[in-house]
Amino acid sequence: MLFDEFDREVFSSGQEIFKSGDAGDCAYLIEEGMVEILVVKPSGEHRIRSMGKGELFGEVSLIDYEPRTATVRAIERTVLVPIPRKLMESLLEKSDPVLRHLLLVILERFRHRIDGSALQDLSAGVPPEQSKRRSIVKGEATQKLSLAHGMKRALRHEEFQLYYQPICNLADGSVAGFEALIRWHHPIDGPLQPKDFLWIAEQTGLIHEIGLWTLERACRDWHTLRPFADYQTPFVSVNLSPSQLSNEMLVEEVKSIIASQSMNAAELKLELTETVMVEQPEAALKIMHRLIELGCSLALDDYGAGHSGLRHLQRYPLGTLKIDGAFVEPLLASAQSFEIVRSSVALAHSLNMSVIAEGVETEGVRAKLLEMKCNFGQGWYFGRPAMLQELVVRYAKGSSKETW
Image (cartoon, rainbow, N blue to C red; front, side, top):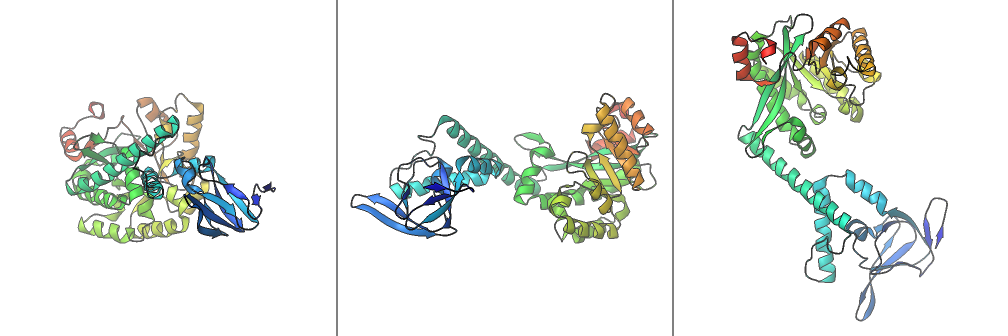
């Protein structure tokens, strides 16, 4: 066997690449040549197939850590590209836990069919750290499947609820609008925050249904919330996921909801993150322009926490910049956070954008943001998120923000 400068492995005709029972620490892609796959039976070795250029072999043991189940030998001069276990482990770690779990189950059944032995736990004979890793994968997969199933039930049984947090004018504390925030009142686990389930909804495609439910409910509730806002153009903000913004049907769905709820489109602010601008920039730009044509306004959410770049602010039709609370909350104690917030406000104003600072928790932060000429603030200083009826009671009583 020879190695070249590209770490290929070269085998001559008749040379064994690995044999049955060897440790499976590597898979191979055939770049040139041909190999034969052999299994050992009482009557001797039997070729079960041959493989040529572009085909992959040895992957089963690589993934499940079991010994090789066959012998592989070069039929002619063969050049192989090795795929080491470390690379595969890294790729699997980044993959979906459900897919990883299904893969391990399939491999378990494959081995049972090959050797005809009684079905055993796939972790048998596996190093403790690998067995532990498999248990974690199984647990993650179970949790994800359970949550995905639960979300379908939640949509049918009204387990989702919208909470609304006021967005206030920094100068006088008056309410300019509200952001709609979804919560899941799980029948067993209790209230769940968006971070605990929306990532699964995004991966499983359920985010489309949940997103439409959120948008329709927010537009319906806006007629009740609107009288509590004291601003020239009051608004309700609704978050759009990357999957929604890449869906060509989104504009028609938004248009239909606005019409069905008799809402002024100018009072609907749609918040989005930069993820979709990075992954599908052209599609995002097209859909964003169509949403603007409907009369909606767009806000860039969590500015500074993701792929923030000047080209995004310059290229896309954004009317509002929301500065992430991770920078706003410590701005009085951190010179770095102070400068990030100050420069972000100045940049947004230079592009004719209004600015909302998230995470406003104290009077000192509010006052400093006002000095920076930031327009609006959102945070517990102005009010924590609450359900619609709770807000109605609070505003009807004329409750001050300190009682929230």
